[in-house]
Image 1 (cartoon, rainbow, N blue to C red):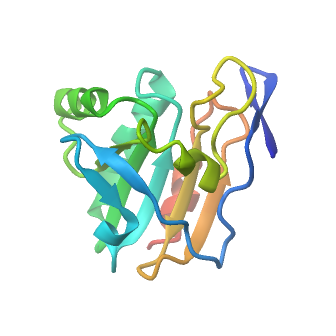
Image 2 (cartoon, rainbow, N blue to C red):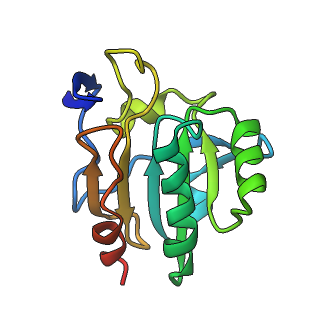
Length: 166
């Protein structure tokens, strides 16, 4: 369990982020076309997991935009933007914003993702959604960087996450 805050009020997540030096857990998440995507779909690529509560918040939307413009320019790197938003919302947001360099994925059929990655919020008004976190892996799926953002309304450290891949 990890304690973070939402506008200064303590809330908790179910566990811990994947361990640096370890492998990320497999997953099956829904893409914007409702197809299933898994870790195997990104074999051989470095991955940035941009995990957040909902596209319907300014900070979450800004993180998707930022990773679309910055991280997507890196060679052999996939940017996965993951939330509990429905695939339709992910698709609508990405189309409206012209975001075509990220892969938007939904946990709506896969609640295990939040548990396996330690990001499922278990208390407070956002219980059941995902916390704001970043996990970066190398091309072999080994975790090189993690950040559990301590205050949900705060941006992740984009520079630190991207520096691991440069």
